[in-house]
Each structure stands twice: as structure tokens, then as C-alpha cells.
Image (cartoon, rainbow, N blue to C red):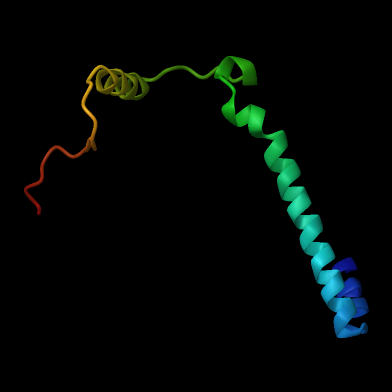
Length: 91
């Protein structure tokens, strides 16, 4: 209801004022997005102990970590292709 009333209010204004309202609203939404982004940085980049998450390491995680550790020991540069498929006979 409030949005509808606001839209009717903006429609009654000149095109110059409508553009000003559009820029103001874009600024408000952008500011909100930036605030949310900044406030969640610590949660997204923190370790599970810092964020209070008591996640356990699964066997899939251990396999992934082992693959990363193994790829770090090589001194070659290039692209490494890893596949979870066991057969390519369909291609």
C-alpha cells in the first residue's frame, strides 16, 4: 500500500523530479547492499570456530583437502583437470 501511494506521488511529479527520485532510490538500495555485504564479510571469510559453526569434516571434505595438498606439492604450473566421473564411454 505504501509503495503504491509512493508511486502515485512520483507519477504526479515532473520528469526531472522522477529522475531524482529514481537516483535516490538506486542510492538507497545500493547503500543497503553495501552494508549487508560489509557486515557479512567476517562471517563469510571466518573459520568455522570464529563464526560459531561447529561443522564436522566429512570424508568428501577430507578427499578434497587431500587433493589440494597433493596438488600443492608439485612444482609444475598449468591447468589440472579433475573429474568425478568414473567412465567416459558415453562420449
